[in-house]
Image (cartoon, rainbow, N blue to C red; front, side, top):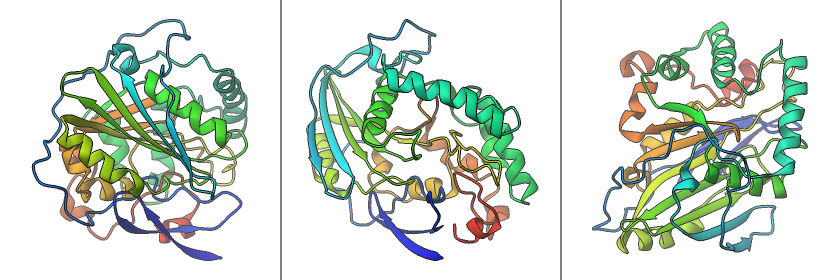
Length: 318
């Protein structure tokens, strides 16, 4: 059965996907420029570069404040943190000391190589090349993967502390070993670099739940001197997709992701976008978003790739 699903993140965007036991990976991030941004909101500058050093034993990572939590009654929840600024929140490889994540990692190391041709799920470049070949064989452009693999756009790294902590919150409510699901989060930093604010939305679907509840507060934060550092979302592994041999977990923005980021009034005020699978991450400046598409004229009429390949029928519904 085909269904038409509407996802709301920064506005209203139509995304199609095939219904199955697990929803196919369509728009992990669905946004549009519905409504105008308030006047006199500054565009973020690069004032908080993350550490790129390989680090440290787990355990020092985590939030020190309790979030304001709200449940929407359909399995989705919002969380808002106001954290004291700490450099280690942005340190790559500094992961939360989380037994559930360690269990999940061991499960991935057993399941993915066994069911997906020996693929190492902890090698992001190998995962990208694996998925690239699947879409190439389906007759689609490989430009998004090539742009990452050849270093044209973004930086691949270990997940940082914030990404690890938010993965853990999503997994707490929606265990990834049971069913792959996604979260989305806006991350803001004030100009004095004393406070980090995180607006997180968790949910039970393989797409980012709507975040319209956060917009008014975020725009007020921006007027109060915060900068929109990034929008982060999760690309989980889909270990159930053995038929099509795409286990995803790839930190490459899908076609719907790129369209959404390009047409969002709020994201026009951001510095970057981040994608994580909990272990590895891609971070790229939004100024280079167009490089994922290559030649725009040549790309016209092409079917957009989804986060996970589930056959040509799924592509038709992108």
